[in-house]
Image (tube, rainbow, N blue to C red; front, side, top):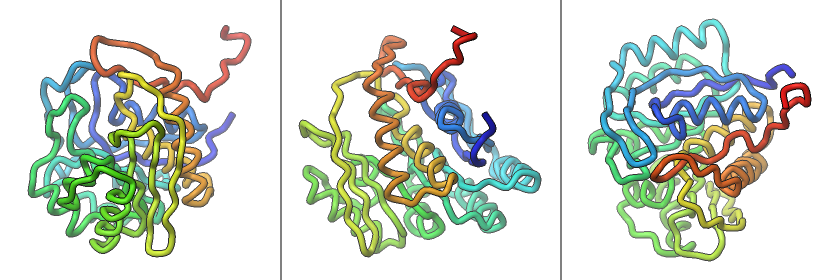
Length: 270
């Protein structure tokens, strides 16, 4: 098969392969599109936690973005970990050059094991400058709490927080409900006109490393293929749920999800 579309990923690397740019490439590829990358940081991590983070200089991040898009123009862009204000500034300048409208931001702030991946000035700059340049932002509940300075304990709290992000300049917000204590998954999409709740089965598993990266990349891929926002979110959520349901069970800690759940292997390779 030939790739259906092209997706540029701007994110940090995860040496264990479960999250970050590795999860993004796997997702985009598994869903039938072509992945390009601009790496923002190199992390040494595994399923038990993060050992070290080496940031890439803003100029080099810009070089990766600009040089890639000069040659192959993406249909959509997914943004993950941006660790400093300077990096965010560099990315915004590059985004304006691309003129790509379908941009999905996963505001990565805290690793699964609890390690903080971003500083306070970067968080402030995301709120003031970056989200205005994004088509869709996909925070989980802890990230939404940080961005809105509110406490979330219910679906109603999620909706209130989403409205705060819209007032801050976000065009569309998908708040992921995995951290909510409930028997089912409730992910909420909001903009100025729509409040849509995606309800799905909640799978009990410790192997959920990389779910946020994967979801935002899946949505970006579906958007890049021409699907509308609601359908892209619906299909992205379904892809992640199936990947969790597979329960890959690698490593001693929070293991990765199964990005290959959407692929059927050709008989001659079995």
